Image 1 (cartoon, rainbow, N blue to C red):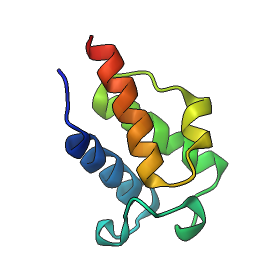
Image 2 (cartoon, rainbow, N blue to C red; image 1 turned 60 degrees about the vertical axis):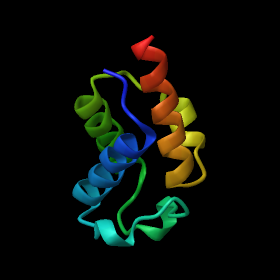
Image 3 (cartoon, rainbow, N blue to C red; image 1 turned 120 degrees about the vertical axis):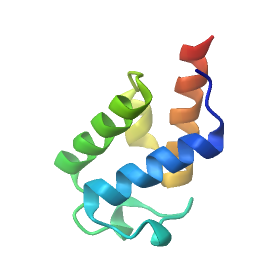
Length: 86
């Protein structure tokens, strides 16, 4: 099932909010890991697994780790979902 970038954004924002107990209203495309208390390497793994489980795809961890902010993370996830849909 192909999902829009907006749907992907909602999944990623929701996963960030749930993983870090961070207010979803405070998440934007410009949000970085350093903006979110507790966002470290262990919690990053939990975040990525949560996104994978919700979307039913395997994500390219190295590309996700290279994302400088949440907006770039959403773009990588969207590309992966789109590639798996085709």
